[in-house]
Image 1 (tube, rainbow, N blue to C red):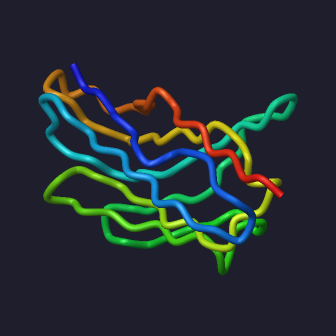
Image 2: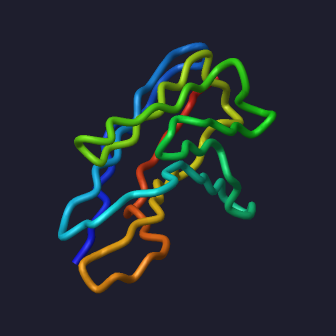
Length: 120
């Protein structure tokens, strides 16, 4: 059973920073892309940032220059440093990983979500 466990959400004032972490555990053969989606109330879930196993990154236009995604392949962990936070960044943030497990199944696994609230 593969699990992704997130941490690091919380309440912060506009202009502040938070760092999200997400660790994959279980019987894992390999981890391909990892990343973060977010979903604000009344809105669709959107991709925030992603990173391949080789370190190539992709960001939503709304967070470029403010968020930085990174990963530690040895720990199967992805991080996202969020700076200059804005009230519109308020959402539940979900990490995901494209993971090949012990059954040789490769598919998306999701974290439980962590709330990020930015006050104005």
